[in-house]
Length: 83
Image (tube, rainbow, N blue to C red; front, side, top):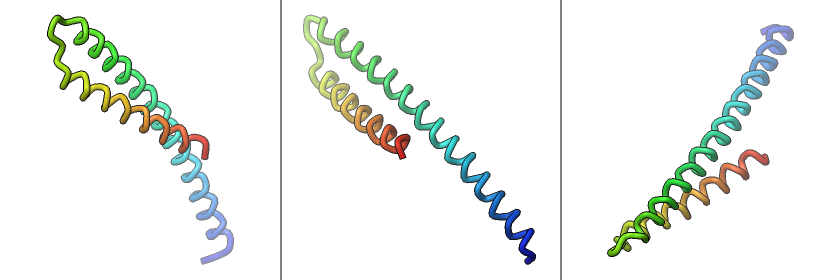
């Protein structure tokens, strides 16, 4: 392989890596927004359920656990964006 072809391949790989990094960052941002929307929906569900005369505590607990999980996922995605 010639030196010119080798440089061309390295350049192409670097360009592809930059594109991949951009799309990973973009996907993380979209994922964070989606998770934040899910948190909002779960909070609404919890409030609606609590207003009932006999709220289903099992559902409320489940949604609260999911909110915690979503927040952890947002935190992980934020750390990846900082890299």
